[in-house]
Length: 97
Image (cartoon, rainbow, N blue to C red):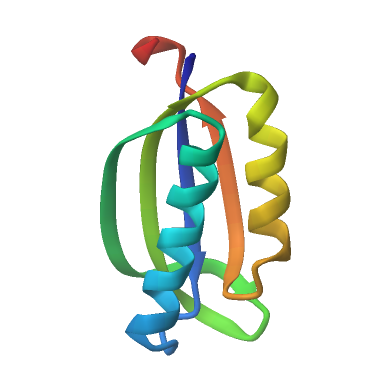
């Protein structure tokens, strides 16, 4: 398994239940692929560098996890079809393998 880092943001005006559902869906996707979530950091509201879907702020979350490289495509697909997630980025962390 390789170490990865996922950074995503959602609309800061969405309710906590929707936010929790997004987090649970991400964790479930990683777990179903036999991966392991190492750490989840809630960064909170941050100003965006440019407007995204009419938003000037985003509510950021950073997830550190281990997974097989073949399973990253499925996680990326899930994030793309989740309407609450406005933008995301998955990065391979070679310093944590």
